[in-house]
Amino acid sequence: MCKKGQLLNTSPAGGPEESGEPILPTEQRRVGQRRLIGMSVLGAASDAFIASVASLYLLALEGTSIHIGLLATTEHFQKIARLFGLRIVAALGKARLMAASRISASIPVLLLIALPELDLPLAHAVLIAIGVFALREFLRQAGNTVWWPLIQDNTTGDPLGAYMARLRIRQRGAALLVPIAVGWYLGANPTAARFALPFALGIAASFLCGFWASRVSEGPLRQREEGVFGRLLYAYRLKPVWWLSVFMLVYNLLFAATYSFWVVALTDRGVSARAFVWMNSASALGQVCILSWWGRLVDRHGSRSSLSLSLCVKAALGLAWLWMPADHVWLMTWGFGIYILWGILDGGQNLARTRAMMDAVAGDHQVEGFNAIMYASALGGMIGGIGGGALLDWLARVPPVGLPFSADQAYLCVVQMALVAVYVVSRRLHGADGQPTLRSLIANRVTGESS
Image (cartoon, rainbow, N blue to C red; front, side, top):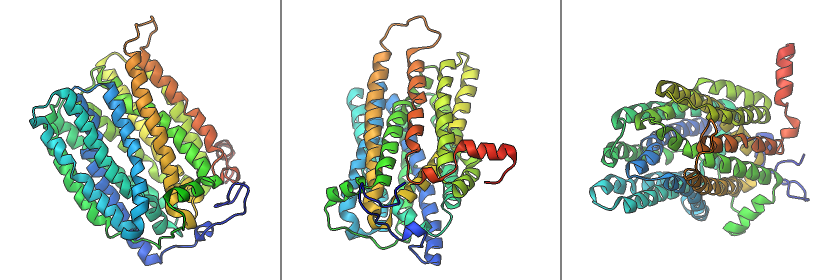
């Protein structure tokens, strides 16, 4: 297995992170970690007020599956903004770039508040709304250029899994509580004008997030002489970065082609807007439930076993779409159960992916390495979002063929089960060969051996 920073067919070149050498002094790391948590909580609250209800807002404007797919695609396409972030990070610094992006991203949301009062044709209004959500995401992604570098700056030298578990628990706490209030406020079938208050609160949270971001500790920025594209190409030539990029591309393609359309499948069968928002809270609750356990698993055994468990169970969960209950009470129970289980699995996958990213990206190509991975993720999301939306729209017009499940149920089942392909790719990630497999951990647990 190649070492971190090793070029394809070349010699290794790493950084101090290779041996876990801290980038910042202990006190600066402690302060930076606290401020990253504060920033992430406020960011999660802002997203819960705005992004989590974006699809419902489009449906209130009489949007279709095509519009939902287009929205999912633009959310990933906007990661192109990281090219802009790469260009200006040297001038602003990491923390100030993050702060500026959070504050500026809140401004376009004002148009969403005003849109229902403009008396536009709904066909035009829904496209304008998609454009506004896309602009907000573009500005946010410019700041996300430095999210993982800031995490690396403030955690190298400390147990990553334990810290990320604390961060995610607090972050998901906001994602749990805010949607409960938002769902109660929106009601069963909200009009577009009803979204004004959540959007206004999201703007306020985004401004506060920007303030916290400006105070995060940061390490020195290591610039390379190549231009932006040259730096990204250099990162892709690194085996650890390349395989993690493939992993993220395939996962986000399948994720965008399925998860983005759960709202369509559920609301078409009578699930209210309020209940759907609360299901998102259930997913956050699932993440919080055993996140500390996931963190310990990742810290003790690396990313391989956590990725194997979460991805394989997510794939198997696709079969549940073939047994969606017709009875409303049972459908609600089924929906909340699916979201809670997905949240539990997502918590483990996210922590393991974070560990894999920190292992794959060395300090001498920190910014371009993390963002090369995110560009691959964006490409997969764009393909999955627009492709999934178009396919579901076509399937909706296909005559029934006498099966006990509908075309959209079959689609969601098949595509979600394809996550097995992501599991296969995860075995090629940096350091996976030297980490215990899920099978060996289970066997040791059963026999009572320590690992």
